[in-house]
Image (tube, rainbow, N blue to C red; front, side, top):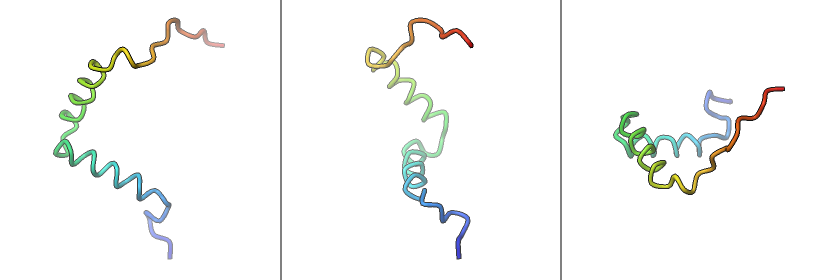
Length: 55
């Protein structure tokens, strides 16, 4: 019998559970952490120089 979560994505759900637990299931804490990492590693991030014109 196929259940609601029998789709092969349990590995992804486990990662998401661990990430949520790392920040006490508080999205504000998670956002603050990732914003801090974005500032810390800004020189490693890709930034597009020009906007691509819509076709």
